[in-house]
Amino acid sequence: MVFFVVKLKKLHEFAIEEGKKEDPRGSDQISKLLDKREDEYEDLEGVKKEKYDEDKLNNPFDDSKLIFGADREVEKLAVGIDIETQDLLLLDRLREKGEDIDGAIAHHPVGRALANLHEVLKLQVDTLVNVDVPVSQAESFVKKRSKDVMNGTHGGNHPRAPKTAELLNIPLMSLHTAADNHAHQFIKDYLEEKDPYKISDLMDVLLEIPEYKWALEYDMGPTIFNGDEDNRVGKLAYDYTGGTELGKERLEKMAQSGVNTIVAMHMSKDQIEEAQEQNINVVASGHMSSDSIGLNILLDKAKKEFGIDIVEFSGFKRVSRL
Image 1 (cartoon, rainbow, N blue to C red):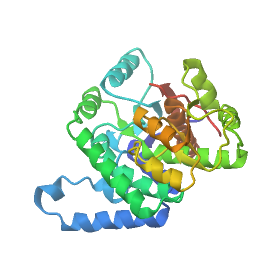
Image 2: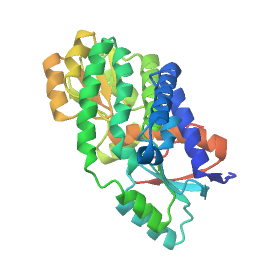
Image 3: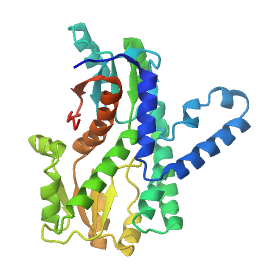
Image 4: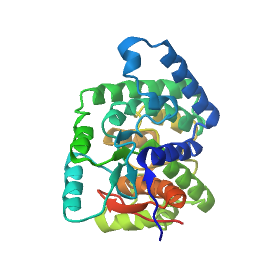
């Protein structure tokens, strides 16, 4: 295998463009978003314009950012679901022991990417509309949840991981929604092709996916959170992208729109209880494994384009489909 050297920012730009292609919103909605940001940027003045994150003008995924070392050339990258201070320290220790690792890709956002996680939830207006929830109701759910997420992340220690990467001289970027879009589209296409009839069939076809087989080693494989194996799958909804899960209020409207089963990476206790009230089957396919699916598909594209080498790290399972 021949590996090539690429600047981290070029790899990031490539990942963002690929993420756009898999986005449930479609290219028109993304263009409208970016045009609106351009207009807002032009109206800024003073320190607000000086400190504005100009990456937002071309990147609709505010949770997928270059964190440190944009101009550094990389060849071999550690890829992890969570890469924070302790993980960066481990990477530094591995490099001290002779591991030739040039930088890292975190899936879950850190730094500015985490501070802006709430912006990505707007994508879920379209995932709800795609299962026939009226757009006005979808927008209402998303706006409320986006505000809650913004309030929750605002007080975080967002400089910690970026400063650690800088001090240890480890190039770092995050690829969250850019990767999750790939997981969303893959699972949707896969299950539409398999067309499982009962929940038991759905569980069986999920376990044909290598990442979900791997998850069984850690007892975190696909699990029925609500419903029964003998229940019919019916109309499926997919909960794989858009930053983080919405509030439980959406489930009543999803039930009214005819959704019978939700396949999700994970689901919180209050949402499971609401799903029980609405008689919606819930299958949690698994968090680390589902995140790995999206990353793997995106990394396959990057490997084909740039020949980069990947090291499994921090909850990520590498499976190549090349």
